[in-house]
Length: 147
Image 1 (tube, rainbow, N blue to C red):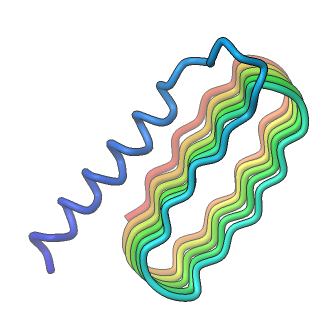
Image 2: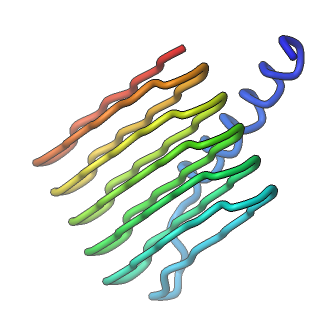
């Protein structure tokens, strides 16, 4: 298990980085990509506006991901591996980026962004960690890592 955990962490972190680095498409469309492996995993996504990107990856059991995007060109990624994680992103504005990667058991993360060009990332490994981030305004950046 100690050998497999860093590999899972690296794989989900790579997924998170790739999704956040993706540039906007030429079309005025919003996109959602979902991968679910396991049992009793749930997602909810609401996109209002144009050119949003949302990606959800869930592996394991009993995960919940809720993503809301309002405005233009917002990006959100939630990756969950293990059991009983919850991840919530709420974005309002233009060009905001939110990423959540959770490993282990019972992690909870919330990211709320309003404004322009804000970036937030949460990486949690282990058991029972909780993070809440609120960004308002323009050009704010935060990264939270808990193990």
